[in-house]
Every structure is written in structure tokens, then in C-alpha cells.
Length: 142
Image (cartoon, rainbow, N blue to C red; front, side):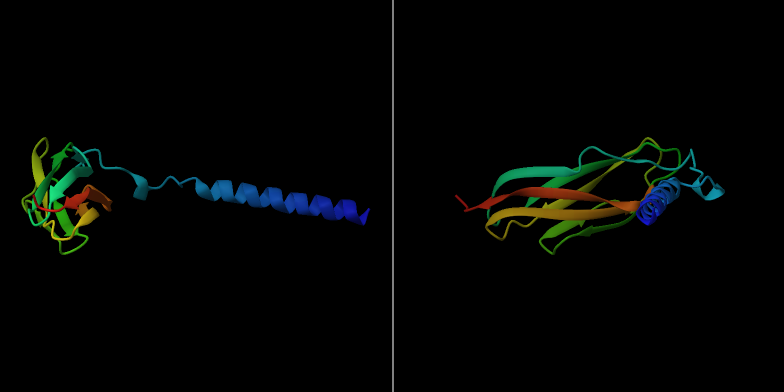
């Protein structure tokens, strides 16, 4: 009888824990979760640029097109390259609704071999940054 009660107690405890996890996983409806329908929306043409093979010592530029699909101006708050081997160019001006801009990343191609570099871009459209990638292989100069 004690074993049966112990098994029932364990089962009840486990079931209540599962229900508690499911209940906490669902977002609570509140005023803080209201989405602004006019907010800027960042739309990238691509997030990865594959250079393929590039010759050593000859810098190569990748362009990432950013379009504002929202109804308020989009602002690039920050853009950072993952290392000093990549230089960035981007507009500091707000991107008006329906308009686009280019984020350009130039890789210096100094080191031989494969590379996989990141560019982290934060905008006012989303608090989570977007990570852009440039990839390729540096080969000896011909």
C-alpha cells in the first residue's frame, strides 16, 4: 500500500511540474507585448556573401542591401566587424520607409586559407542584432 501511495505521489508531482512548465512557457498578454504596426522593418537581401577564391593581398568588397519595409525611419544603431581584417561602410542617415541602403564590408585578404568573418548590425527595428557573414578562401597571387 505504501508503494502504491508513493508511486501516486511521484506521478502527481511530475504531472504538476509539467503543467507548471507549459503554463510559464506561454507569454502573458499585457500592454508591454503590443507591437507597433508602424515600426520600421529591416529586410536584408542576403545575410551571407560567399567570395569563393580570392587572391592574397587583393581586398574584396561584399555588399548587403538593407531595405526598410516598415512605416517609420530605420536607423542603423551600430555595425561591427568581427576582426580588424574587415572594414565597414554604411550610412548614418535614417532609411525612410520603402528606401534602401548598402552595408559594405571589405576583407583585406592578407592571410592565406579559408575565412569566415562576421559583421554584427543592430537597428531600431529589432533589439536582436543581425549577423552578416563573408566567406571564402584566400589563394596565392597569380
